[in-house]
Image (tube, rainbow, N blue to C red; front, side, top):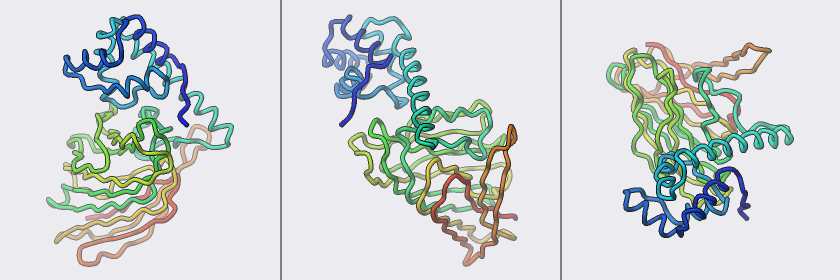
Length: 303
């Protein structure tokens, strides 16, 4: 059963709706006239407290909702930010009470200033199986990576899978395409201009515990030669992680599998790296890791 709540956003939306004297159907119709598509079901969930806007597409139209309801500009957005802050604090307290932490302390290879709280950790899916197929071309300057995954839904209020990507200064922002099993949402690009989180939203009708298949393709063009697969940090354990790297006709001098774990010692972060060499067969390198948890794993090579 989905529990309702009366947080700041629910109260603000319910109050604005009551003051407007409009029905949910009328609100939907008024928004449609503005070219804004929002379902009656979504508004009903906001009114009852069963959910709040989580996707970027929903948050982006809150200004239109305020104008339709005749509410003061910024009222709903401010209430949403307040509710998200309260929920984050409550989730952290609940996690500590259970002796665990729902989100990683840091994302490996991410700028220290990156705010990973923009990820909705309560509804971030668990990665059960991930297969990454990377094709290197253009003299080592281009990489096309196909990712196919099986995930487990943990939250039913706008379940998400966050794709993290980083790039060097001067490189173009990686492009994501070919998404199946979900919808690509607006990217969160870090102020440094070298890191981004691309949210992929899953169907809302999924129940907690359901397995779901999804996939996407990432294309990256780099100024310098690419020397490793993307370093991804998994917020929760993953049962199996499989790599395939296709170098084509131009082979690197050496290839190695790398696993990185980190831990805090006071204010410093200690980095522990484990490696072993991989064999190139027919221009292809493969590796599989089982039960990956709290670490960054990738393949690194030298030209």
